[in-house]
Image (cartoon, rainbow over all chains, first blue to last red; front, side):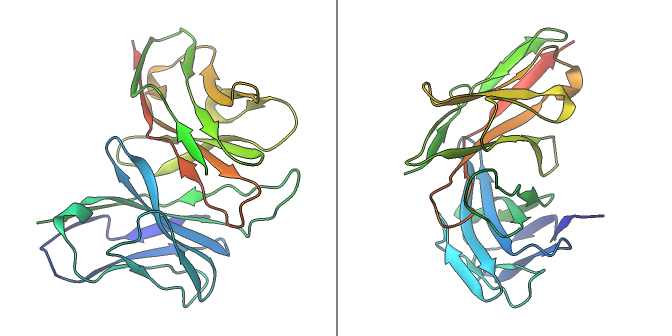
Length: 118
Length: 115
């Protein structure tokens, strides 16, 4: 089954304790992305990756790191979590974007990781 | 700059009635438009997309959306709402002149279908 998986699904931690949220996709997608979802703000992109070893900042990258050593994995790292990073996080993937008429790839989302930073 | 607006935080509709969830967008080039649905405790699921061609796009679960270039809108519609349609709906846009595959999401509209 084609899917995007995230672990853990739920996490409670304390300020300053480093954590990693894993994301893995089995669709051989080039493009992967992390979003956070907050009430009234919708989804905001944190980081994205166009391919292995290629990552770039999204709209709200502060306090986060990512890596893309393998095509299927795109972990999100919080080196020193703070309470304002309490949120619902989604990983997404899609095949390599192509430009031009009639081409656009749908992003597939993971189930989400709910993080609480105390 | 790209942006998406969903002007209604909440939409209530009676079961069996038609529903509309509104979305307007702003892009510098031609838009690629998407609707996603989020059920409680679940990730986002793709509903439909507009790339080019017919302005009326049909998607999953009986939903459709109409692209209106002059009004820069992409409203989601369904002729007859079901209680099971109750969920959070997100509109998203990508500017096809942008280099990456980044989607810009609206803030979401919570649809409640009343039995």
